[in-house]
Image (cartoon, rainbow, N blue to C red; front, side, top):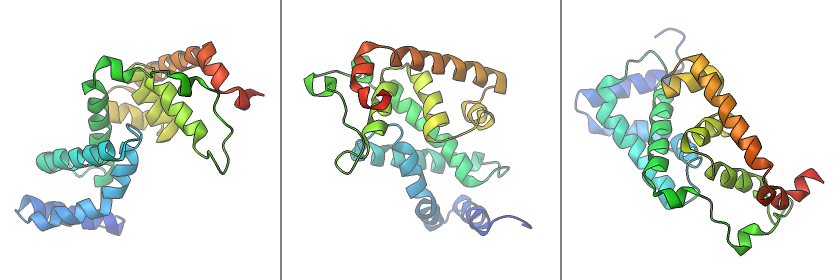
Length: 194
């Protein structure tokens, strides 16, 4: 197709071959997009085994649904939507008590400033804070702040109107702000505000 990036053309060619029964073509799709999907799944868990499992689930779902791919957007966008749904389903499947961040003595201590010894402190804190939010809020904020997706794309991935997405974003931000005012969190991030 004219004006289409080469990787998109390769994806369309491989999809056609997979639908014709050539399973090796799906391995090429997995090779091209596997790393990007694993990075996206890291937004849903920090456990490498869970990330691998979720990434696997994304590609199983994609394989089983490949006939439904309409080719009106790049294949990677379609995969990203499946990944979002897969990650959200993972959050919903865990037991309620696991979704709540457990504050043990070690976690109650203030976090150190990011630096050579602790470069991911802020990211881990954000991940922990998101863990205390309802899953729907957590998903919206993950898409917005971590994946850096705009409101239009969030609406598309969640299959809702832009207005509905805007309302959900606003409510999620308000819940995050309220959580940030909680003394448990303020004590842990003193280095960020001093």
